[in-house]
Length: 371
Image (cartoon, rainbow, N blue to C red):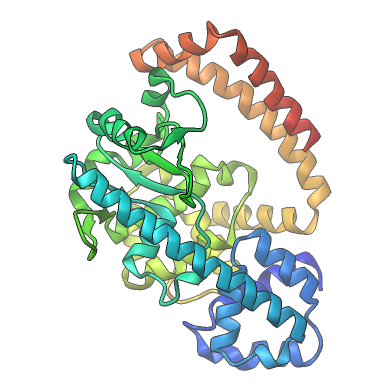
């Protein structure tokens, strides 16, 4: 079993709940001894779907076919993730009450939104890092002050000029609270923020059925954010990066969404959206809820990702070359934006006048080279 086969097998297992007809096929593959479980564990943990894989195999009645020590480990890991998510839910509800008391209403994003909205029947399926929520830009400083007064502390110094052209306030942490908090005023950094603007998301958001006033983006906005966050913010489209956890979320979010129609309304981002959808089709076994008409561009993107999975060393070299090219391109792009955008100009000047910025900037290249 090579890396691609492990990836495809993991992807197929993740769809068993929605496509139970695949259970017999997965059972036959396991029974024949064709599964190398060490590779499956590595794949599912690195893609943050290990608990989801366990839950899908458990519901399909396939756990008796797995090594007993693996089942015990999966069960313990999933239980720990469930406990963590319970604490995150409690912390998000606590934040809601706190912010409501000062006139602010959070719009929760990403994994926290999915936990609070009940997207998954078992909260253990989703691995969540930070608690992310969105507010209007005019409320950003006030919201941060509320959390700071409540005992949260920034992990790094907050620079207002940088926040205006980035997308969130400095990450905040608090003793005895399990998750860090990121307060967003945009879901994408400048200039991609125009693709899904806060003034579009918040008015269309849906109220959560919890105590207080808290919201999540509408399903359509969650779908677009789900895809473009990995394609643009995490540079997945340029480097061929992906996460099964993102594709697994997309599978659930898309259940009652006309994806082709939704995607066609997003102008210059259509190719990034379609490419991710095409990859989801390939890695999750072409589920019906993720339909896509693939052009040569989408086919090339999928083949590039598959090549990266099959040839990781060659892919690392080409990614490094692309990384340095993109870094230099972004420097000139930001300087160009600074000529016409006051916020960008102030942010650029703040960094260029700070000697420590040059040191950290050079270190980032070194870390990439070492990686």
